[in-house]
Length: 165
Image (cartoon, rainbow, N blue to C red):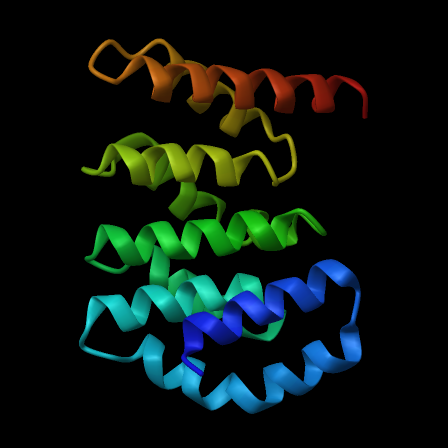
């Protein structure tokens, strides 16, 4: 079984609430995940960053920080997908890397990575600087309509959450 296949299995276990089998799978794949994250091959690194979220591996969140700074857009995207998945349970995952997410959402060369960073910010606490940044992105002329709409929706959702606090 490959790391990607184990990640799919781990995600299914997590979604079904089978914590015992998920913990066993985490223990079995922990070292392989770490090794893949250090690989010279961007495909292996991307699979590792994606697996962190699929395994719900909160102990490996520091790997996601490394993934957000990876030169490969595929790796950054995989790390963002995992971060978004982990943030569904608690905003701490997003809040701990908020400055990196702001930078990716505002200035990454890859527009898909920018959109994923915007979506990941949705899972964090509704801080004013994030809302203002997203509103600015929503009005930026050089971006695709899809990216601007995503930023506007996430900004509106965070603003709504901020007002209900």
